[in-house]
Amino acid sequence: MNYKSPPEPVRMPHRVLPRIDLIPTTVPRRIVAGIEWTSPRVGLMARDPAAVIEKPRRARPEVDPFTIHELERIIGPVTKASTGKA
Image (cartoon, rainbow, N blue to C red; front, side, top):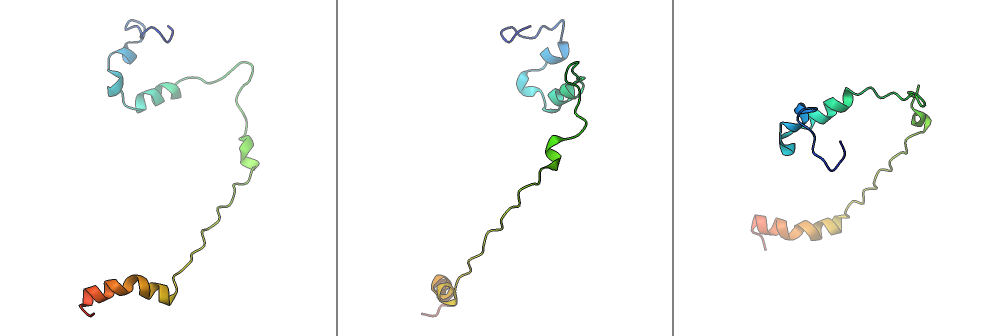
């Protein structure tokens, strides 16, 4: 079977019966999980090679608070409108 021909119902009936848009994501995951992933030349890795690398620390964003004058200029009109004072 290659990419040009559709799956044959005789060989793979579980992959041909439903339409592709009706197949839930768990079906391909289950198929891939059931495959024995060993290679005669490579084998499985005993440990994760990236485990020794430290994760970069995320810098926290600096907060730039408003001054009292900026705050009064921003919410002053809203306060005046809500209280009815001119």
